[in-house]
Image 1 (tube, rainbow, N blue to C red):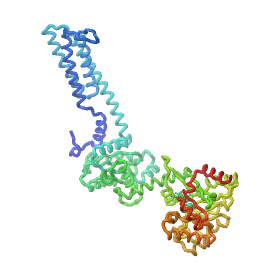
Image 2: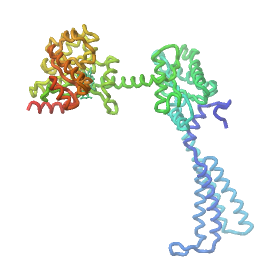
Image 3: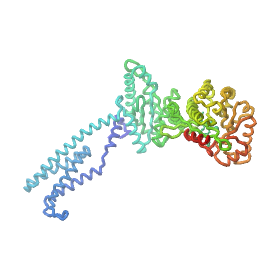
Image 4: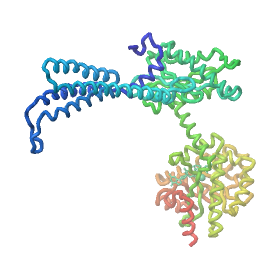
Length: 580
Ligand code: C2E
Ligand code: MG
Ligand code: MG
């Protein structure tokens, strides 16, 4: 038998595949031994019972022992048939030998002892031999068809390499056996352009040539490690590397697969040069579970693509995991924005007498499993990938249409507050968008409020001020959100045409923890009032915070204490109650 890692490594891939099937087909030795023992036991009882003259009591009846001989004989036959059916060649030959060797014994018994009662035994034996052969050969035929089907299921038809399924089976087995291995995620660079420019047939020939070069390295053990190359999908491959002594061995092996692509490809009379991106991760060093390892190798491969440098090989590093999670989140956010599955909730705002002032619309997003994604996660992602204005826009349109309807139906004097991102605010189309929003929703301008965070105003003061002034001139309200976190100067605050100051939750949290903190909030409120602004406190969670805010002259509050963010339907009910 060829041992893995031996000099003779021919057909490593095929052998690995065979091993994968064998694992499934493996039959236990103890069952085999048990069947043989039961066979000999029942068979020896056959002749003893056949010649017995005594009776046994069976449910009150006396039954002659010899009448059980047929039962034992059938049991013995079943044993050999099971051997021939389920235990492969070993079972077949064992069954054949144990039955055939009895034939001469029975014949000698008949001749020497003139025991004619044994003659049916000869026929019984001959028929059993025929049955064993029939069972074995038809089973063998079924197995060969099965093997063919398994081959097809485990092999990629185009290249003959093992496919994704075989690759998954192997890594699962290796992980179960706790064998160290490295997974290399391979993606061809620019293969799509070969397909697009030369046609799929030529593309297929190139893939076959690449597979042949890599298969040779694995089959002939040229890399010095034990490699398994699989084609996962169109131009994606995977190499599983085992039997390495050091990290350097792994890298050298991958370099060999990379170098194998250096020689140009001559296909259909054309010359091609193809390269690939190799990202890899090592089991137990880079990841402790398969669930992590495979995405890590992919993340490293994508890092190669991102860097786009001449270095085609990168090993996974822990910071790639966050990049990878970021990418996954990015695609979720993109999908939610593009499919319009972003939705909104409405958090009520009240005056100090608990009278409804209005609602702040807050964006919400769910992933494919229906779990809410935190705003702290998706808002920065939407900002980073330039989709925040689209996200704002969805909330703007949906929330204003809903609140516009309520205002029309009830005549309620409520305000809708919308959060705007800096990117969105500074788009030249922003004022027009707001005008359209007013027209479409029918909300009076004085009942629409745009929240601009203090930090936006500081970072891009002049430009932001210009846009804010423009919408303020339409009669729209302006709120400065998260006030206190941006360290803005007094003179600056004075120059912004806002009408509401929103004190950030962090100050409200601290407010009752000491006189200084309370004095600080009181100062902000006074400051706002001096500049002609109303002041609302955000994130009010406790009754005694309300008491303090009343004492120091706050105008409005928004917080879980009086109202968590509500579904539009619940917000509507709240409006109905407030206008009664
Ligand atoms: P924000 O505009 O300051 O909104 C207030 C945040 O405080 C909301 O979190 C709200 O749910 C939360 N909050 C209100 N009261 C309480 C309270 O009593 N306790 C606690 N612990 N939290 C409270 P949310 O919805 O997670 O929004 C976070 C931020 O995301 C918002 O801060 C806003 O800056 C941004 N955002 C939300 N929706 C949008 C949107 O449609 N567009 C843009 N550009 N940003 C949005
Ligand atoms: Mg806000
Ligand atoms: Mg805020």
